[in-house]
Amino acid sequence: MMPTLALKNVNKTFGHDTNEVQVLTNVNFEAVAGEVSLVIGPSGSGKSTFLTIAGGIQTPTSGEVLVEDRSLLALTGKARDAFRLNQIGFILQAYNLVPYLTVADQFTLVDRVKKQGNLSATELATLLEQLGIAELIQQYPGELSGGQTQRVAIARALYQNPEIILADEPTAALDSDRVKVVGGLLHDLAKQHHKAIVVVTHDLRLQEFADKTYTIMDGHMTLS
Amino acid sequence: MFLALREIRHEKLRYGLIVGMIVLVTYLVFVLSGLAYGLAQQNTQALDTWNASKIALNSDANDSLSQSLITKQTTDKLSLTKHEAYVGQAGVVAKAKGQAKLSAQFLGIQENQFIYHRLTTVAGHKPTTNHQILVDDSFKDNGYRLGDQVTLNSLTGKYQIVGFTHNAKLSVAPVVYGTLPTWRALAHVTSAYQAGGIVSERSTFKGADSSLRTLSLSQFINKLPGYSAQNMTFSFMIGFLMIIAMVVIAVFLYILTMQKLPNYAVLRAQGIPAKVLVTTTITQALLLVVGGLLIGAGLTALTVSVLPFGVPLAFNVPLLVGVTGGILLTGVIGALIPVRIILHVDPVSVIGG
Ligand SMILES: Nc1ncnc2c1ncn2[C@@H]1O[C@H](COP(=O)(O)OP(=O)(O)OP(=O)(O)O)[C@@H](O)[C@H]1O
Ligand SMILES: [Mg+2]
Image 1 (cartoon, rainbow over the protein chains, first blue to last red):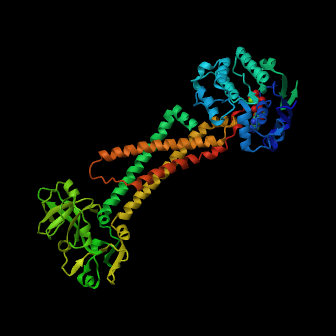
Image 2: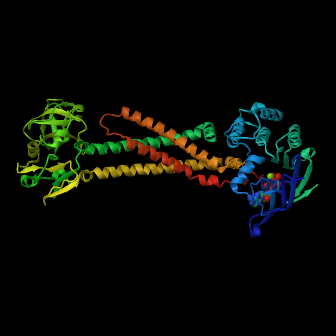
Image 3: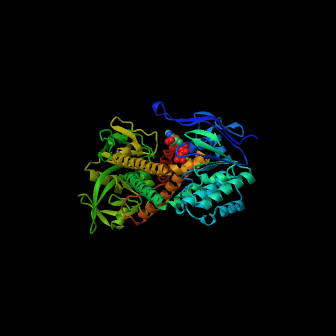
């Protein structure tokens, strides 16, 4: 089966000469539609770097990033924007929401920029219900707790109805019950909606929802 | 538009301050421009009503009508047509019994010539004898009435106000129109002198005599005492204000943009095109500037309506359009400065952790 998202021999170094740090070393990775792929590693191991390269926000020093067998690195900046808007749902580690938009407006903004292919109003309502944030719709991000913010961010990413969901520590601020909800949600998205889901985390509680788990240590990735 | 409006709505205080600043700058620019225009008008209004295009003066008069004398001998040699008119200028202090003294500019003209024909009265009639005068209606605002007997400088005779005319100002003083013989009396010259200058409505007119120098009316106006200096001063003030406005707006927008960069980085990470964010910033700047302009214009209108009489505040359409356009342009330029930063915002910067 063709992987939806693949990284081949990806290396990433920051800095030059004596300051050079190798953050990713020969990373090979595949995410398939219908599966949750988990990448577990300690802080500073290169998880966010990996995820941003996979999502086309950052380019690797060497190697290839393939989306449905098309090279992401060959795309122009505009085409990569469009790719992110239409095919990728990012759940970032921090600063996910625009502070001056209410929760409802966060979704409206998506509608303004991406005119089609977003969730319907009823689908959105169901999603918000599932995540337990339906009552927060008129709040500003500043009025939400860390966990609520994270759940709104998840809803926002899913709202775009992307093929690929890249999530960076989506459960960092959540208690075990909420972790189960989010884990279950991501799992269902993979199974029922045939999405490719990639979650990087150091939260071992998510392992039970994963179809496959990679471990990342000091920039080396292994499939366990 | 969506992002721009939502942000303004959420950050009312911050944007309120910017609008307040734009209001003040706009207000100042409007009022200064109005003053500049008003003063410029009071320098030349009387000349404007003549609709003339050339003036010939004595070449030794340093382009000043009040210093110029032209002899009969000279004028007899010129073949003047109905498109030319004699005029003589003298500074006068007018005084009527029971009224305050008024400094004015006396203009002696001849009854059968075009300047006389061009004059319009708002009350009374034009002078027909040497002891009649037609005066600017600001005399009326100072308490003078039709029929008042006025002394001019230290001349012994009395001059009767037989009419008022509107907008007759020269060198920011009201004009008193009278006859050439009265002018001669005021200038203490004999009838060997025909006039101070010859005004023509023809652009081809030239005072064909070596003792004469012919100027276009705009050259003549620019040589009016203090006129160019005054205009230049105002132009500089308005120019600097515009530049200051631009810098301040740019700095504000720059700081605002810097504060918003994390949000913009998130939006960029989500794939929202940089174009949308740039449009948002410029829309926002325009909204702020237009809002400020409207309030500033409103304040200016209010000022004009409560201003004490005599402050020469005047506007015309080109002036208003120019000022408004200038401030709008200023806002857009100010908004363009942070655009570069927005285009280069790095989504990775917010992702770390
Ligand atoms: N732009 C950069 N310049 C230099 N070094 C960087 C840069 N970005 C990341 N690094 C380094 O790369 C390493 C991996 O960073 P990364 O953010 O990928 O870690 P992480 O696994 O996401 O950590 P965490 O769990 O704390 O979020 C870190 O040592 C970090 O200091
Ligand atoms: Mg990280």
